[in-house]
Image (cartoon, rainbow, N blue to C red; front, side, top):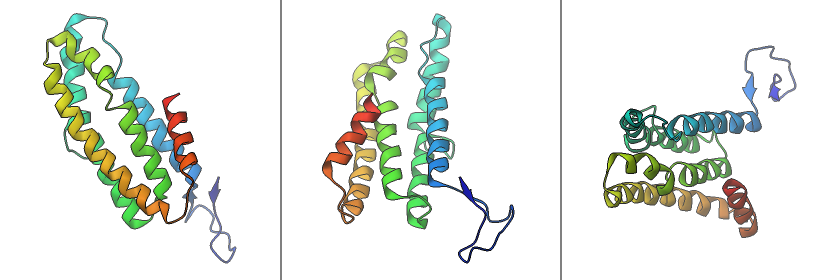
Length: 161
């Protein structure tokens, strides 16, 4: 699923090998799945909850290159450079919204530490609003290509399954 030919059909060998869109999407999804599995496993020992909370706080709420915020920055940069299709970025951001910023998932860890659920809810809502705005901006750009609203609904239903 990679191309080893230039625009004129000349063989490039290993130089100029580029990943297909499908491989790129799979790489992104695989990385997100691994992060999700790492963050949202409910600890079996009481003493582990604090460590998991710290990981969630870092990966979901801190703005560093290796966090979700950094990943969102990367997606936005890729969109500007046109190295990712807007529909793919839209999909990945929706995946983040549904799978990572879910109050019920996060609160399973926080509740064990008597952390304020209202404070957590406010923190999550801030990030959900930011991601939702990014999704709307991308969707507006995609609308120019006249994508059916039913397709959006179908994709979102597939993510929820």
